[in-house]
Image (cartoon, rainbow, N blue to C red; front, top):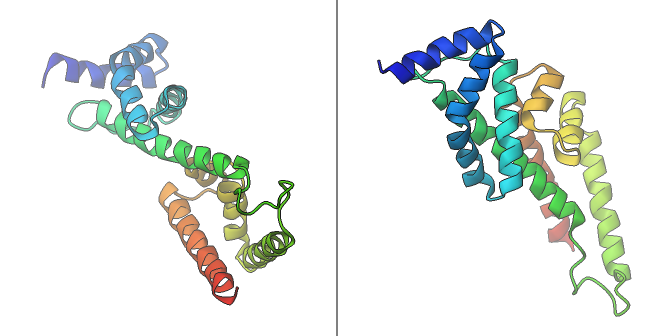
Length: 189
């Protein structure tokens, strides 16, 4: 075991005991690789910086649960940064999708949607609303938190008292179900 590896274990133990200086040393030691892990996923400097801060905040909140891998806290930090960045990326993509302007083809000559597009949009909203209402209460809540809202899977998991994996799997099934319902509409039109 190298001195740095032993120092990671000792720093984590001291930080878990409330030693802010030990936590700051962990931060200083690992902030660059954590940032680059987040940047690799997001390709956005500001989002990567926020993800890095969220990763270290998660470490602070869960410090008593962290398991050192290969005598270093870095693998835990990198894994947490990756999953946090993936959640941030999904949230940013959803925000971009909501803010995206209408297709030029979908708009009429004055820039307004055509009557056909308005009818189709209303039908899509009706199908989605019906599909969401048919979900179990937990799945409806997950839909509202993670699909409509901007919650990460981690925050939804904490709010519902389930695991990150359970949220990820259920949201994946929800999206598949909605895609199937919408593909039925496409086939009919």
